[in-house]
Length: 353
Image (cartoon, rainbow, N blue to C red; front, side, top):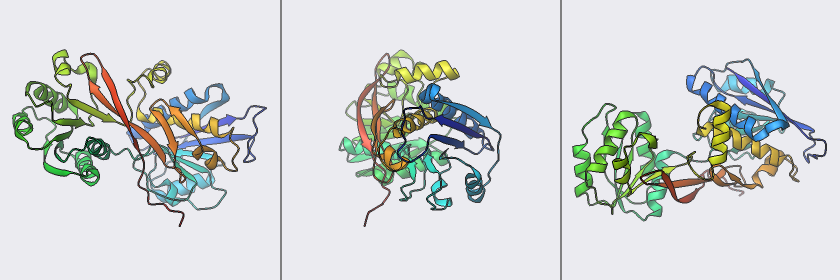
């Protein structure tokens, strides 16, 4: 496992209400997973952008962890004020001692806790849930769903079912190499549903979009997708035919709010920022702002903030769960266009009583 240690050096005139003269921050991830290696690289780049000259990022070599016990042992050995991680169970495997570091959990699949020592920065941005919340906002009553036939697709459909307040009129699953979508388009033409949700990937996604564009689907059907669409890959005639479709996303770098961040990130890493890059940037920005706060703890300083992120306005509830903006984007013949936002909270079940 690789650990990134980030020392945030306090400036001379900066008074820290919680008694520290500087903050040490460690990014901890599972280096046995290739996806996590890329995750850590993007988090590191985002942190570097937000912190600028205030601190240096030092990459330390690694102590791997293979499960909750290893993670807990590793963190207990770290002399650090803040641990940034995407380990979903991070807050449940650590002791409740006051001396434990503040956790900044960047995993959307986080385990809910009410300990007020963990910041859940990503928000509850499960794709199926986001699509359902947007459908609810449209007052859709009955929806057809079409998702990829794998574990992620099954999970997205389950999340959609749980959050959608209307009824599901039917569901279908796409094979990774599926090339013919006549049946699915026919269903959309004759359906009594007023909404349709799809989440596909790879070549099947673009074949389906072409079929949808040519299928003369009614523009009164509220069609919502959470698919990751490369807009440059869409032919112009396909783009023009998707005007009735809405892309719902927790993060899209191709927006006005994100333009400056996207350019800076691309200049630093040579690629567009992922959600992990955004999370790293937000984490660093939050720590800088929190160091100037007047509350007794770093946690309290962070949750008292409301600030403008590259994804839009973000704030926290009293238990450290981010209240995040989710964008709804329309398709034009030249680009994605922001149609509006919904504010998404986590149903964590915490209570003061």
